[in-house]
Length: 445
Image (cartoon, rainbow, N blue to C red; front, top):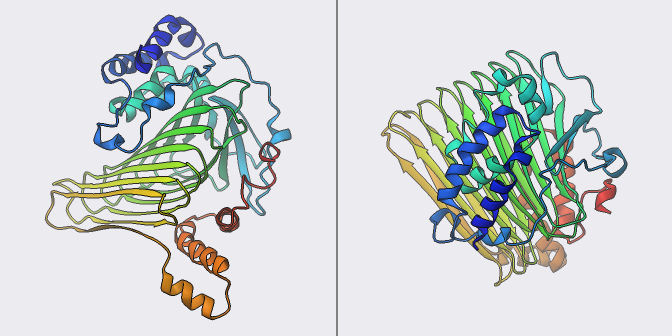
C-alpha cells in the first residue's frame, strides 16, 4: 500500500473523530482538500519543484496523530524562557498543533485577536470565512494534506488602522512520547492601514522522529505593514514542511526573514501575490547546514499589477554532507508595468560532499520593468584567507570571520534590534560548532 493510500484510509476511517471537535469552516475546507489529495497524492521527485527533496518518503514512519485531541499537559513557562535581552514580546505557544493562551507582554490593542484557530472559527465564522483556505485552496499536495487533517492552529487578526507596537512571539513545540506527525494552520489578517510584527520560533524537544506540516495564509489590506520572522531550531530527527501564502493589496508592505540554524529535513515554500499598486515585498533567508541536514527554500513572487517592488536575498552555508536547495521565481505579468524586482542567491559549500542546487527564475511579460536575478555557488575566498593569515589571524579564525561576514548581510535585514543582536551571536556560535539550541530554554539543555 502506498503512503498516500495509508493516510487516505486513516482519514476515511477517522473522519468523524477528526471533524467532531472542529468548526464547520475547517471541516468544509477539509472535504475539498480530501478530494484533491486523492487525485494528487504526495509530490514525487519527478516533479520539477520536488526534484531534490523526496518528501513522500518522509511520511513512511508510523507516526502518531493526535486526532482525538488528547490534551498535552505542559507548563510552557517551566520549560521555555526566552532570555533575549531587551526583547519585549507578547508570547503565545502552539504545542504540536494546539494553541495555548498568550502570556506576558502588555495587553494587545482593542479589537486584536490572537487565539486558537478552531475556537475563533466557532466564535466568529463570518470573520474568517472569506480568508480560511482562500489562498491554499489550489496549493500543492502538502497544503491539501495539511487542510485534510488540520484541527487547530492560530489566528492573528488586526482591525483597520490598528498598530500593534509590541512584537508577537509564537513558540511552536513538538512534544510527544511517540513518533509524532502534527498539522498546524496559521491565519493572519491585517486590515487597512494596520501593522504588526510576528516572530515564530520553531522548536522540537524530541529525539524521536517528528514531522510537522504548517500552512500560513496572510492577508494584507491596503496600506497594511507586516513583519514576519521565522527561526528554526529543531533537531536532526525533525522534518518541517512549511507553506506560506501572502496576498497584498495596494500600498501594503511585507517583510519576511527566515533563518534555519539547526534542523533535520526542511522545505519552505513561499508564495507572495502583489495584487495592488504600490505594494512592496522584501524576503530574506539564511540557512546553515552540516552533517546530513537538508534545507530547501522555494519562492514565488507574483507581480500581478504595476508599480510594485520586490527584493529577495537568500544565502546558504553548507558543511560536511548537508544539502541546500533554492528555487526562486519572479513572475512579472503583462499588467505589471513599472515593476522593480531584484533577486540574489549566494551559497558557500565548505566541503566537496556538500551539495547546493540553485535555480533562480525570472519570467517577464511586461516591457517597462527593472528586474535582475542571479545565483553563485563557491567556497571561501582563498586569497582572503591568505591575506588574513598573513596578518596574524589563525586559519580557523579567518574561516569563521569570513563565514560570519557572509551571513551578516541577511541578519541586518531583521527590523527588531534585540533579535538582530541575538541572531548575530547565535549564528557566530553555530558557525563555530558551539550552538545546539538557544540559551535560556530548558527544553534545549
